[in-house]
Length: 397
Image 1: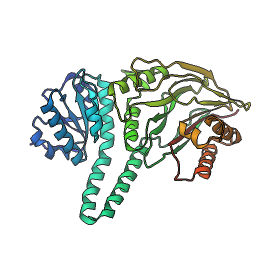
Image 2: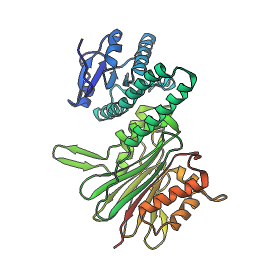
Image 3: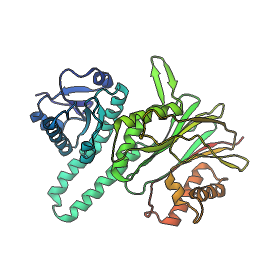
Image 4: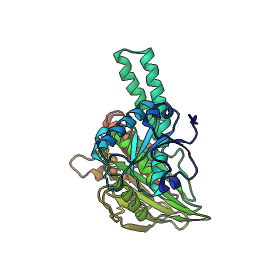
């Protein structure tokens, strides 16, 4: 039997040879080890980063075999990507089952499969560590209190993993700088955000919110982050994907996924030309970002689009706006509206009033004061929804 290595090891449980789209998705980055017999699966699983399961579910016997595979995957701490036969919806059977796996159509394009495999690989180290700690817990603390302590430790590790997917440092490009407030309602969050350089003068940033809370929503955030295409590279050239196209492609990928437990998300995505100070943005079912002008006025950026992951083929209209020195763009999740709501008034009123009150502060201090205000009103551990605020500031002349 071949010995699997920890680095870039992928276990292929399916027919030989690899399907062409799978072969292209792996792009030479993975050492592939075939496993035709499920009987030999358990020994190999503990050494694999990702398990890629070929199409099954064509009949009851295939369904039972897939269940046995996923049971072994769960026990090993590995993460699986399950390929489903063409024409078979990402079945409610799998959605109801739950576990350490993602799904994709067997005929999915290579870039989508690559995103799923990368997401699974990112989850695998945490599951491996949790499995090892679970084994140690059973030995050292077999009584009931250990179960709670183990669960708490699992959630701490999951929260740490999710935070690893957030930007470690927010870039400053030209006159533009960023600050962020990120406060999950529990250990893990259905909210997430990112800020990234696209080239020397363009910077992309977004806030997204997966429906629901807890671990199911948090797992989907990883897929969404991986599936959102912001730049396409071909040879020595590249193309910056405009926000409206990036959201449309993300929507198509999510609709193909057809999840039932966390079936949609919202997002606001913008690209800023830091030299021309031209902002282009699009939204998918998300609260409208706010533009705080240097003259003291506040306006909504009204490009609106549907929820992501519900209907394929949707379009997401884009809006362009010219920024000026001293302007500030604020993206946020609906949890921020709720946390700062003025009683008897629309939720946005409280958020807008607080932003107005803090408008003379730096973006970093604004984020800190918003955090303090939220904790003052609700307590640091008594929030009913995830809260994210992302601030993009154009320095005054």
